[in-house]
Length: 200
Image 1 (tube, rainbow, N blue to C red):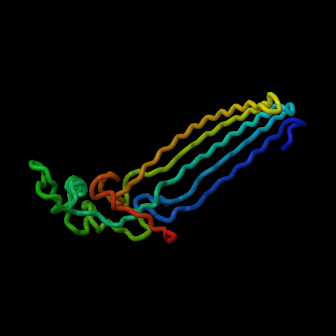
Image 2: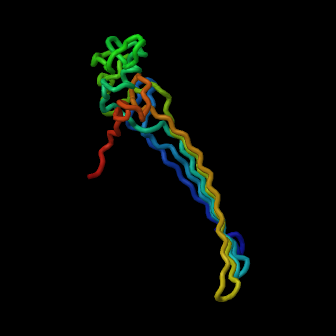
Image 3: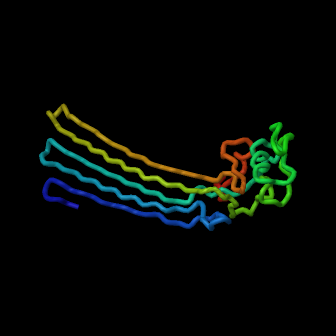
């Protein structure tokens, strides 16, 4: 868009909104959704044939429900599932600490009890049984400027300056069940998968 004889500006934007395809049982949140907005602006100023100033700003905002994890399986003999199952009161679960309520080798019985971190937590290919809070948000500002000055026919001075401010926060319930396993913990890291088909 012209702004007089020596300047021009451009503004554009867009948004993307899509429902998720994995539903959490506890609260009905749709995981894997898209909810983002982007705004771009640019200004170019040429007061003389020897000088040009270009300014640009971009802003992107996302506010989504998080990754679309579903249950794939869990190692009932790993320490962390055993610990959280004992803490939740799973009948027959044992954990490897003497002097605790259920000492013994790590073990979670494969019974249909929500207190037990076992394969009964499988809710189906598009259902998430997680109970912990989930979220995925980000806000990114980018501002840049380029000034070009032709000192002579053979010499040009150019200054490029930019600033970027990213802010993001994500919380996921990677074990997808009632237990409080951490994503990187033994026995829990393999508890989720993304059911979308992938190209070969």
